[in-house]
Image (cartoon, rainbow, N blue to C red; front, top):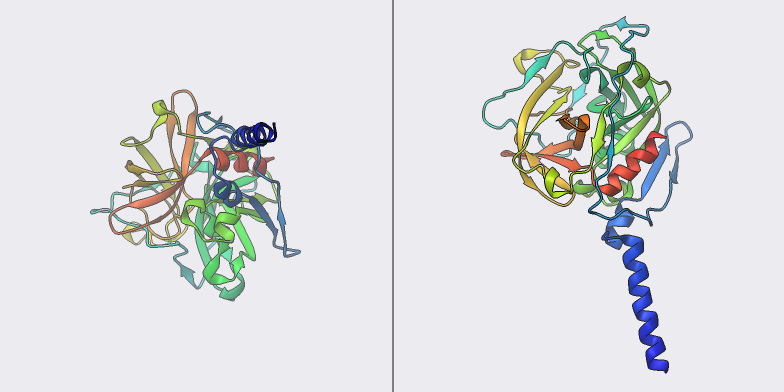
Length: 319
């Protein structure tokens, strides 16, 4: 009787754990633990515990929104920066010939939902750093984790300015201040590239005008991105053709390898394009990102996939 009771408890525990974690390892759940930072109060806080993940086979998607496209207090100004640095986790790659083309119609959708980021960190003094992001709601920008939290420059950013649809000295939708920065402990605590994603909450709602990107998971067999072509659009610190920082550039590339939480692609990028959306126009989901460009090597670039856990975090950050 005691033996039977013991085995029943073990079996029940196994079933319960399988239902709670639904295919996610305990380590993965902990690494996707959402953490937020207030740059004014300097306070960190854990947002919630991911203990009720959806099954890994479930497809999650959020639809894009095109916005009203009305210019709100457009401004023109010269860039005041004296020092601009590559903020990439590793070198981003030009695969052979640089095939990036400049995007001049930055007020067209979805270009206007791509955001130029101007960042300062605790140990960088007055120096400024660049990244890219993309709107996923009226006031939420998704970007690379290392854009909001840089291990080599003192941790959480001290300030981030976001400028949707920037085109050199033109800021057609003005600029906004980041009020809360988000990432996950897999990045902030462990520095693991596969958890290199985050978000920025803004002090305004430019997405109502610019619109925002959809985003989706690609864990279903019919959505496997391997071999498919996607677009990467962002704001490189060193644009081609001696163009100025603050200009938008795009390339299209194919997915060469797919891993559980990252993918490799051959779209050309350079520094400050970290956080760029990795996206295409889906027939059923519109302009949607499936990953966030983060880094590269000499022969390929890397993007963090929007897994079910990442999707749930982005949803929470967007509220």
